[in-house]
Image 1 (cartoon, helix red, strand yellow):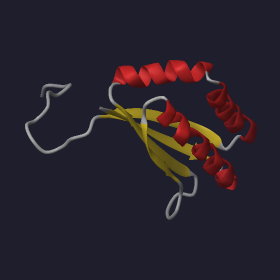
Image 2 (cartoon, rainbow, N blue to C red):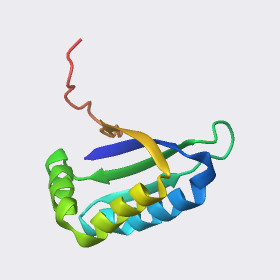
Image 3 (tube, one colour):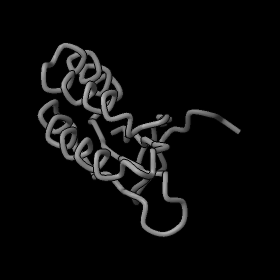
Image 4 (cartoon, rainbow, N blue to C red):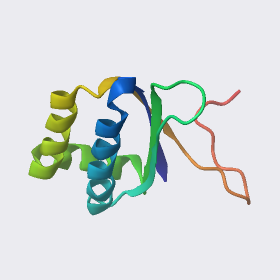
Length: 111
């Protein structure tokens, strides 16, 4: 399993628009085989940082979703909405793997 972590820098005057954007993407990710864990909007602290987390069974499944989303009309409409409202100033994407109980998994970096 791979979990995508997205950290957004937002226009703090457009949190309502970003919340709508997030609500557009949750069912889209799930339609393409992912499990969305939600969008997390500012509450206390910084007023312009939001997060999103979603998982796919593998990095290959995530890459397939990325390719298919580029051709999907609903995904394209969601991308356009963010561009038109300018609610997202920038974002960064990172990938993580979960750790559960049991035997240790192989590591990517051997120290």
